[in-house]
Amino acid sequence: MKLYDSVGPNPHVVRMFAAEKGMKLDAVKIDLMGGENRRSEFMARNPAGQSPCLELDNGQYLAEITAICEYLDEVGPGPSLIGATAEERALTRMWVRRIDLNIVENLANGFRYAEGLPVFKDRIITLPEAAEGLKRIAREKLVWLNGLIAGRTFIAGDKLTLADVLLYCFLAFGKNVGQPFDENLTHVKAWYDRMGARASAKA
Image 1 (cartoon, rainbow, N blue to C red):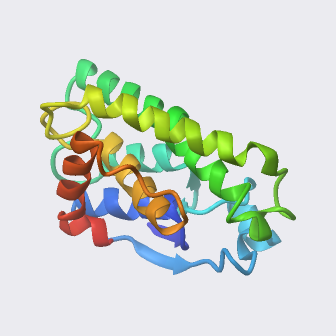
Image 2 (spheres, rainbow, N blue to C red):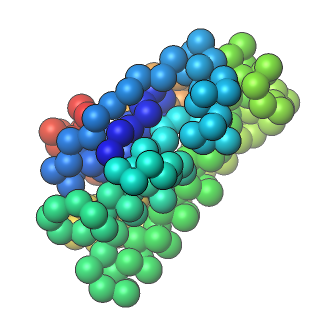
């Protein structure tokens, strides 16, 4: 397998997930800032023009980080990070969906429409007037999450899942682009510190 990799939180999610699974992916760096992901060669692999993209051994391509991670979970070694039972898988997917819609998308678009506007304004439709509101929603949903994870080691319970990897990578990104989370959210802060101490966080 070959990972078309770049800067940004989305590729970080896949790299961290693969590291947690004990998998080493051959990586090809894509110049995201230079727009390589919008050129015809890359668009032939992923018509959405987004990074990352995973080339399978049979020549097929997978995009979208949750799909890539679920594939790696099924073909990789070690315990599942999605879930070993129908109930565990459903809980993981519930938390991934909540985090993606409530926090990740709002944080990411808040960046794209503000600090990242010089890069994104000619690539996608941008709504600069929405940036501050989106950032505020992400902050409010982190407050909501803080109350829900009290007493838990990980977001979905006592085992690390894709939900943890997804949120960690985006909160780490947020800290570097003007959206640091409120460290007075003690449960989120303790969870974030535990995630940051994992070797996979540096993937």
